[in-house]
Length: 202
Image (cartoon, rainbow, N blue to C red; front, side):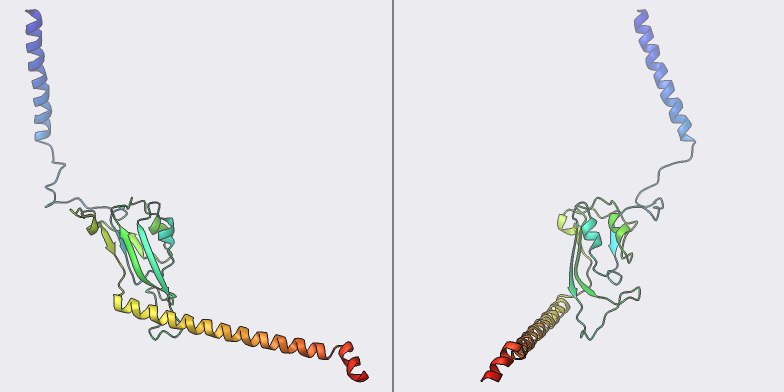
């Protein structure tokens, strides 16, 4: 009987403690917000979704090489000297590489921030955006390059033509050097004492 009364009192006492905590918080200021209608400000240094500014990217591939999960893919094309555009990077330096492909797979990204640290032009950075859940993994594969397929094909053709001319010029220079070397060796042999003596004896 005593044990029964003890259990009843214990149950009643725990309810009182619970109601005390509830009543205490009832008159305190709310610490939650009605998300997503109300939101807390996100710190600017938060490591959320990455963003690339194509006008700043110089194609150095430092971000691709340092990424621990290989979520960044970069492909570049050399800018040929006779390119009529003579592109410039947004920081004022001359562009040496086109960047036809700059892709990030956010399904792999671990938001370590290493890519933003090594970027020499600060082209890639974290944003405050974190709401990009999707039903398809394909939507998490983002392409940042601003070059159209037509422009990429044009630059590839221009580079191939330039490389072909470069190769032909090198081959011509090598051929000319070989001819000059052969001519010099022939001249040296004709000027040697043994050849001169043979000519005098004849």
